[in-house]
Image 1 (cartoon, rainbow, N blue to C red):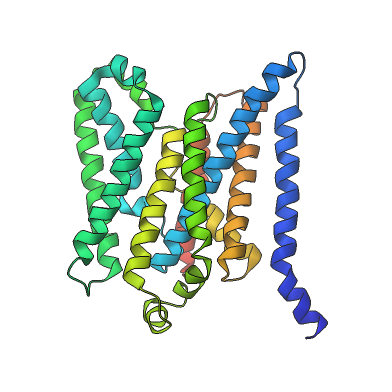
Image 2 (spheres, rainbow, N blue to C red):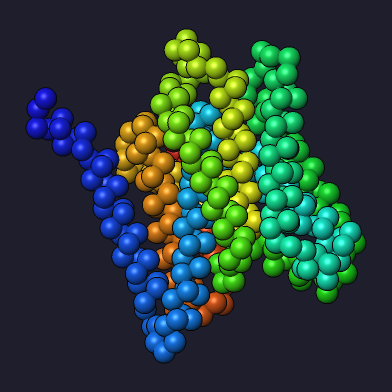
Length: 324
């Protein structure tokens, strides 16, 4: 093996090492910058914010990369299946039928569990309902997800018009990403679910690599494409539920980090792409929260910036007709 080929082979690992170093530096800066006085309060408080940002970044990055793998398209995100609109619809129904008082007094772990079950059940019904007879295309699942997403958004919009304006303010807080007040118990539950998904995903890494070759090629190589796609959709639903329950829906963030990860590591191997995407997402969210607190003094929302930049990148990818 030549020296040039050896350097090319080591390049993704070197990129991961650099991203890891940047992640550590950003995390230390976020924890210690401007901190003074009561360290026993400041460090745990900022630590919970940091843990939330890293967990959400990991969930969004992994779910987007896996979804793009099974769909065979790097322009798509799990939002196309209607997960974000389903989350908005769930929150709207809770407020409409229970009121802000009862909705806010619900056990966050119970609320989180219900959201996860609904989203996982939605993905399972969507997939098995279309593939139960066999021989149908995954693109039909995506198209059905788009239609159902529009339906959820329309129903949520209709209910929101019937909600008292004073209570609607409470509902809006659930729609915008925020790391300012993480729930410690909910964070533990979300971490446990993410760990389970990660263990399942680690056992399927080589299968993910085969899926990149296309449906027909994967089937010829012995992959049960229908079963694998169903498992991936369930894993994606759980990760989307984790990120949405913790900070609310963030539509374009996964699109940004997944494509940036593919650009930096330049490999099809998920053992390298997934950690790269997770590290990039962590760096972006932690650095963004740092700028939000220290520069903008909480006068804006991270989701506004993410959706604006992500929307521009999405339009640019479509106009360039980037390979997917």
